[in-house]
Amino acid sequence: GPAYSDNTYATTGTGPQTATLKVSGFPSPLQGQCEEYNGSTWTEGGAIPTNTTVSGTAGTSTAGVIGGGLLNNAGGGVNTSYEYNGSWTLGNTINTTRSHLQGYGIQTAAVIAGGMLGYTPGAFQTAVEDYNGTTWVTNPASITTARSGCAAYAGTTSAGMISGGYNPG
Image (cartoon, rainbow, N blue to C red; front, top):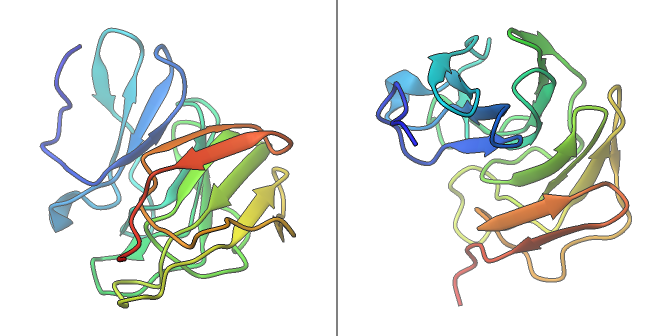
């Protein structure tokens, strides 16, 4: 496929091939940016109001949601969430403040999992949260091994999976 409009790394994304949303990434001037993919071209999307990156992301380019993330590469996680439909709208706060987490599902039935507290060594998380389109609820099921930056993630709020990730040792 075609290249992104912005030269970024450590991005997060969601959606099927014909309605993909790529959110944020580094270098720092590109944090808070997003791009939409329609199956053939990438176009600039709306900027996230708070300049975050490495958030948990779910949904599509027309109905997306992000939760958590790293604010301005400042070393600390955030607890905000936003919904996307071409522009970002502030949602409710997530329960466990963290960055480098992963997400899956749709905007009204999303999951975020794992992550870490900013760049704090060893502060890897097992927390899982579900979103119903209004509220984030801590899921009683947690990840068996605390991790951040999971490589694969997919599913629904009732049947999902993550794999890979980072946890020293």
